[in-house]
Image (cartoon, rainbow, N blue to C red):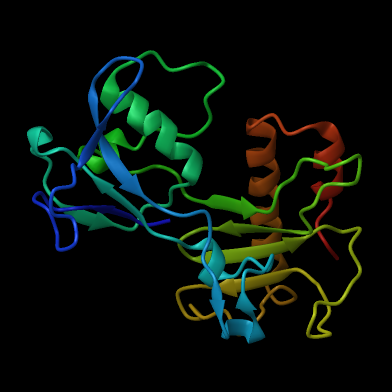
Length: 222
């Protein structure tokens, strides 16, 4: 998710709209942000609309943060890797209330202000991991993305075909030379796939994912 720091002053279509909202807990003015939970397919990879196949068209979305004019923040763009859970701690840091210990994500305040280099080197995307109505976890695929690589990991217990009768299997793409993800390098670069998979497990452990779900993902696909 790339971050854009929007320039000061209202853009077309925003006449009369404020660039900030008021925090209900402390009364401070905090910036608006614009994002979404995922993209949609318009024929890429043979898909249309909303699908659980987490290629770049679905998992790579922009985040636009509009700071209040009073902050005097210089507009700009960056290609930092961030995730939706980062939005809440960012707004709380800017509003200055105390953050709950259970809060996930990393504040983007220093990134938005251009004060320091962003340190996160990968992000993870998936469908819901929590079992619904006693069934196994919904997610069959999980995408791990760095600036260079994208691993679409498939749970090792899954053996299926998609709606186009293509085998559901793990995929690895080199984004710098193959941004549209057309050449699967999983079999050729299993060393990279294994490192990304290990990072994915570390991430799941860091957000206190249950052992039941971790066990579903702990072994890389063959």
